[in-house]
Length: 475
Ligand code: PFF
Image 1: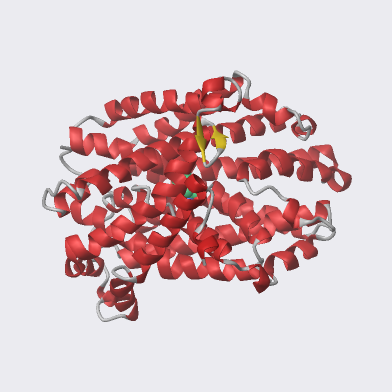
Image 2 (image 1 turned 30 degrees about the horizontal axis):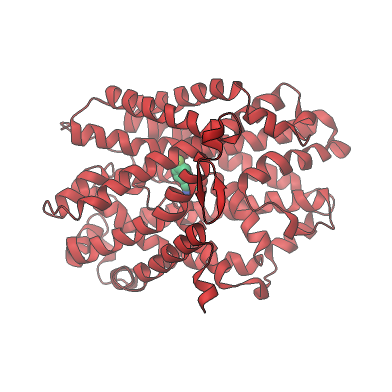
């Protein structure tokens, strides 16, 4: 057991670190693309409702679990369940899920880093050729970047909660906000940018379907870093005198604002590139957008600001995505590290080495599953189609287990740990919470419709990913 638990130094330090976790590739790319394809303002509205009415209470529940116990997810479930064997399972899920999500997310971040370096070398044009992406991800340099990325992440983590995680967030997050706003301001001055803004903001309610609503829910859940044990772990580094509801609201608001602002960057850029673009043709996958489409858009800026200007813009964007992904990875890798320290009594250094060694092997397997190794490329057949090792990790842990973890948190907090204990923890450090509308809403929703919605999302995902059908086909 670690003697005295480290805590974040200040409330703002916690908020920036948690926002650093929440703001990631999901905000900067997946969200704008999903909004574009799914009804613009109508999607934004549904998304915002999910963030504040469904996800925010789950975030409070995760933070409360961590802060009450001062433990990692495995320890938190064990302690509050009074040693029940059954309730240990969600604790293990909340450990394995971040461990595996980190693996596939690291691979995508490595590609971002590789593209960033190429742009710095003056090679923006080559990134826009069709074959480049395939060649790059199958080149040996990917492993060099993987080592570099792991050194950076684990370097931050080795400095601990306050001097590593918090300090990195305090430096990087304000920089990210400023850069994002600067890029938006620049893009809005481009020709046809306003068409993109209108497309983004004007609601098209006809596009809202059951699928879209389910997608908005999954996106909101992922974006707030829920179901990954991160908020439980970060909750355990929170001080008792800080308000959980207040801090959670600040994190959710920051995350949503960043996602919204990213749309004001991506959409005008796309419409500046081609004002007649058919948005249905845009790739659904973030990787498709980042690596195949966006470099072309950035290169097209050379007509107005020259090749050097376009390269600077592209580099700034890739740097932004890299920083966002880095702070997310730091948070997610802290989960298994905290578990090894709390549960096995390992030193931070030893835990870092142990986690990094296993993650490196798995990340190499993911990176090799795009053609380098056939058995990893065609790893398994799911719902009638071949899936790579990378796909499998993403489908299992990101798509499927995430909503299940959320569901288990709600049920555990309200029915096992008990509503009254949870409520007491939320009041700690927040005098105004008792008797507030927020208190009534959180206590009621977490025991009723929030787990019900998460259950539906979970069932729908299992049907979709494993059986090629959907709940909406049954209606
Ligand atoms: N909120 C993050 C995002 O939107 O990208 C989710 C996340 C992913 C957090 C991967 C941490 C992580 F390692």
